[in-house]
Amino acid sequence: MLNLAVAQGVAHPQPASDPLNLDHLDRPPDRFEEPIIRPETISQEGLTEPSLWWAAQQFGGSVLNTWLAYPEQQRIDLVINPQFWTPLDYLERYQFVHQMGLVARSHGYNLRVFNRQQPERLLAAYTCDFQQLPLRCQLDIERGGSSGLRRLIP
Image (cartoon, rainbow, N blue to C red):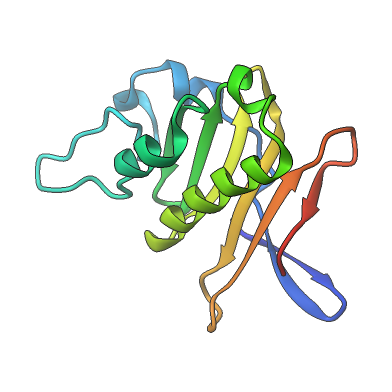
């Protein structure tokens, strides 16, 4: 669920605080209690939503290992390859999260970025409050150290 923090009298959308669920990466998707969409999920009725395949190919490159979409929570968790994420500078990471975040937003989803080896550590997030118009989104990205995520855009 979306949490809202109040800063300077303006509500900013915050990413969900639960860690990356490694079980959802390792178990077959038909064994989950909630619907989860992975890259290999295929719909028999039409295009599987959210559709991230093109975006993953265009913007993810070697950085993106896989992703999980949670339709009930309107959230997408990206799992990055640390071998390719670590050498990226701040602006390259921002560009990756921004591009993938725009695609997630277009489907009505929020986006979080994780490293599989540290599932409790949120590396970046693109979070929107879809209940408010005009749409208010925020991109947060970890700058390193223990300080956590830093707000980039209100």
